[in-house]
Amino acid sequence: MRANLFAFIAGLALVAAVPAARAEDAEILQKPEPAAILDIAKGFGSAKMDRDDNGDPMISGRIEGVKYVIYFYGCENHENCKSLQFSTGYTNPLTAEQANTWNAKYRWVKAYSGDGSNFKMDVSFTGGITKANLEEQFSNWDALAGNIKGFLSGG
Figure 1: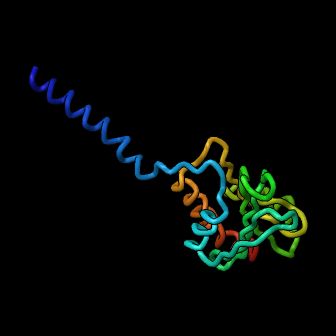
Figure 2: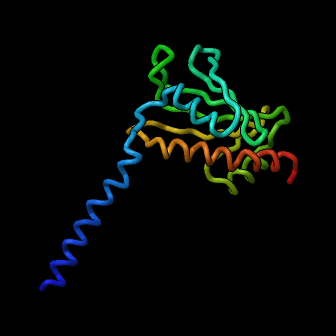
């Protein structure tokens, strides 16, 4: 009986430890705050705040030698945006076959055919995301940036 009681108490202690471990990443981001996004972007390479043609926030940066832009979408009066999109493009057109080859191989960053050879990755903040999840999105973009360069050079 004592062994069962001890196991029960130990189990309760483990259950209590799980929320404590998650508390370190308890910061839920409900919307993409441009300054916070810029701060994370600078941790992965050069980045600066800018504005797009509509006046919404935009971050321009370089990761793994690849120039990219982060566009903010669903903004109300150029703030309180709902999502963002990582984007990079090249001057050489990308064929539909090349885009399909890329998309079959890589999950997070999608290729689109046409002029500019665009590669994009969307991040929605609907329902909120943790800062760790957002940093993971940057990590995914960082990891695939080198693959984009190699793919376009035929590697």
